[in-house]
Length: 337
Image 1: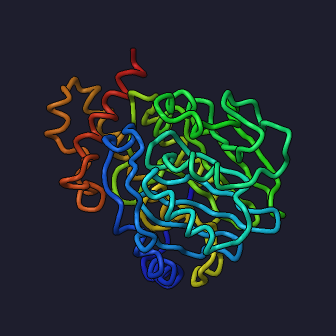
Image 2: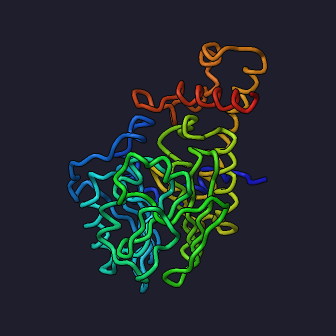
Image 3: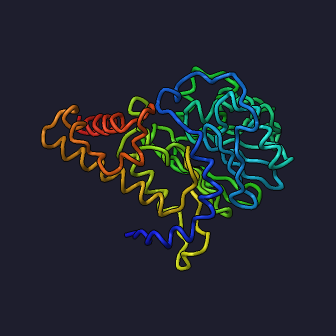
């Protein structure tokens, strides 16, 4: 069992990263309302994005969502593209990071704030190998940069322009590639935030891009209508815990695996453990109340998220504690039926 270090150890080890990353948690808001909306068209100013060097070959662009950028001799791999309105600023930020062309895009899920920039980025990049359509997506062309995702993303993006659709889709547990001298694993997390989430693990960089499976601003969004479930969410968080290695035995070092959430500040393994434990505790409370025959209204009144509201409750936001409790209740009810 993983144990949490004393607060003074964690502060000593990770204070520098948190100081640099503070900007990541200042600009993110919203819940399900912005997930399925059509991509916005107003361009965001380039100054509204922050660029953070996580490793010498790996960067995070923080805007409406966190975007991962791996760079090297082969070109640029982008994990998530942000909303459509930020695409010009994202492209400018990528050019500041590296003059190399975009070669590959990975979508961690189907939400508009993560895939809205697909069309602009795939058209701005340069395909590594011409003459292939990289996996047989229905809209793949010879000139488009491949967009990799779980198969369900393609279904959820039916209302988006065809040029934004993924072109390289898969429905098995793990897809991989070797790019810029680094092994990249794309791991399918079924029925978590949605039915088509993936996390991208960059082995040499020791960075995991988690998408909306992890959101440090609030309780995780469980989109039951699009196949999400509380059990799958906890399973996905457990997988992140297994992938990440903490800074032990020398805990004072600023080291260990970096986990990039879909929104909010960067995390280490201990942060993910705490988040996973929080979600599990609230799930167990809701389950116990459900077994006791309580209605949804009675469960909400019992405040099963008590103790975590101040940190994750997102008062006034779209994804509140009440909506999280309702999603857990609906998810558990589906499992029983």
